[in-house]
Each structure stands twice: as C-alpha cells, then as structure tokens.
Image (cartoon, helix red, strand yellow):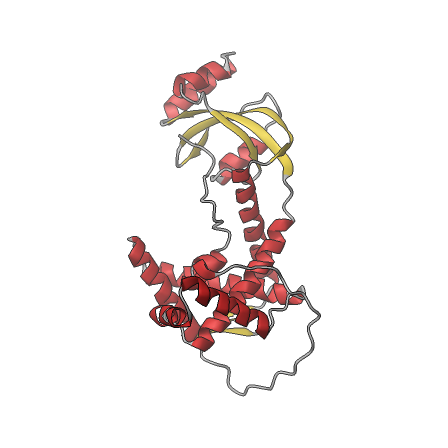
Length: 295
C-alpha cells in the first residue's frame, strides 16, 4: 500500500552527521555565539592534495579517504552492498554538506572555542569509559587526535546550523486530508476512474481496494509523499476533487482531497518537513557556492 514515509526518531536530516563513525557521539549542545575576529591566514603556495574545495576551503584527499573507509566499513557491518562509485558520491556529498553548514554556522557567529571543544571531548571520554577508551575508539575508526578534533568541531558547527534551519520550520502548515484508491495494475485503476466519472462513490471504491484503511492517508503537508508526481497531483486538488490515475513505484493511485487548509503537523510529518527544509537549504547553498571538484 502506498503511504506516507515513516522515519526513525533520529532524523536522517543530516546526511551531515549520519556518515561519520563518530556521529553517534555528537551532540550539538548549547551554542556559544560570539563575534568572530579577523585572523590573517598566511598564504599557501601549494594547496593540499584535495578532492574538492568549498568556498575556498579544501576537502583534503586524506580526510575524504578516511571518511570513505569509515562509511564502507559501516555498510559492511550493516550488511549493505554499495558500489565504489556510489560510496564515493555519498561521502563527498556529505562532506560538502558539512562544510556548507559549518561555514554558515560561523557566518551566523557560532563559535566553538577550544575550551568548548575540550569540554565535549572530555564528556565523550567520560561517556565511553575514559580517555583510554576514547583513544582506542579513535584508533579503531581511523582518527588521530588532530583529525578527530577537526571532525568533531565541524560536526558540531554543522549540527548547530542544521538545528537553526529546522527551528524555523512552522508546526502549522497548509495540508490536505487525503484518501486514495490504490490498485496494482493500470486497468483496474482506469476502471475505477471510469466508475467515479460515472458517479460512483469514492469511499466505497476505496474500501473495495483497501478494506482495512479504506484508503485513508490522513493530513499531508507538501513534500510528504515520497513520489513527486503524487505530491504534485495531491496539491493540485481542491477539497472534494479527485485526481486522474497517478502511477508510482507502489502502484496506480487516484487521490481525493477531503479537506485542505492550515493544520498542525504530526510529529512524523514535522520530521519530514524539517528534513525537506535542510535538503532545500543545502540545494540553494550549493547553487550559489564556489564548489570545485578536483579532476
């Protein structure tokens, strides 16, 4: 049955913290905003070996390779098969997202001081059994002290900016109360549409195809349905109207808008809208940022 997506309580929102093996330790905590001072950067004659630059900041080949190895090891542990090309793209996109979020956090005057960073590291050490345990964890996941501090600092900055973006997502948005007729072949869907056009009752037909839920999808915000065509078709409807047959990976749908208007988001829908807000923010930032991939 075609239904709205269901997400785990921990947001997949961030791509940003999801790939790094240290992500499970990270907590954005309380921000420490301050006005940054201008620090002269000494000229570098030769840039470091890198896979990309994001607004002049390098994603080094060393960091990329380490993240790639951590990601691939995690997939093996989960029993998931990912091609090398796909893994490369996922990791690079995630690092670019981290850099964009972290840069925006600093521009918004979020400043993670050395004292803040040390407090976080001390807290992590205490959480997993002491400094030796943290050191062993770092070594097992391909970090030395310097790379771990860099990764933790950027992840904290990224998480702060992510949280800033999702804090602006309203809890009440325009939604549509939707029911559907779902069939698994086009002929049945077209037959159902013909019956509707001839005056058949939508709810009765929906019950024939789904006697358990009667086709009920509930209140849906824009962007909640997994299929873009389905989402577009639903939001083109006025209350009381039904769609034509919409084909998706789940089957063939006829949607009906029962009501539409401002409505409170369910917790599940709120997570989806927050994820969409971060994805849209990243897409906009990528469009206007100077991102150069190394051939």
